[in-house]
Image 1: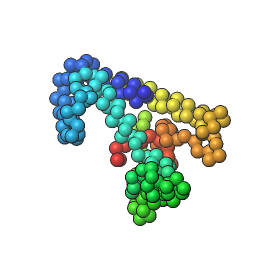
Image 2: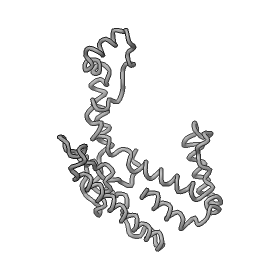
Image 3: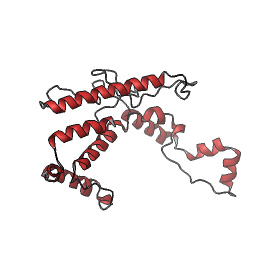
Image 4: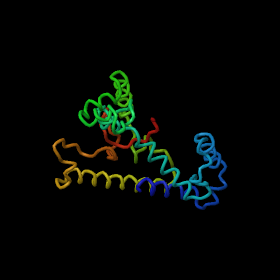
Length: 221
């Protein structure tokens, strides 16, 4: 919702009406490429926005920013332990009355180990996930810019400042929930706080590696 508000305020400044979106040849060419070349197999699906209105533009940009920023950096915390998320299943679910089904009933752990990824492939998969989940030490996070001169227009600058303040509010809310002892799933035996969508609004954090927190301005997958 915070991203959507920011995108709406930003786009509204440069596209004050639906007509300005519809008549922008670069926007229309980009959207045509997204549909017809980027997703050629799905180009005839009825759910594609027409990109004729400001609402179409803000919806598309919001989704792109959300998915591109947050999709891969939390993978290792969940999938680094292979049994939690095997990358492949080598057998179908057994049918009742078969030898494999009896094995599943009598020794489910053994049946599971026969199904999941072999050791070498597992190591490759975990290594890939680890690489994709690492943050750079000079990561630029959502709500940050690496240069103050990204725009000189006052209204977008003010909207971006409001966006940053909203992210600070979200960050504080996450921290409060993590510290709330009534939320047992956050303070159980393992004591793993929720950090994946922690905005990390501190200025240019230099904490890199498998930190499992922060939403980078990234399209690294």
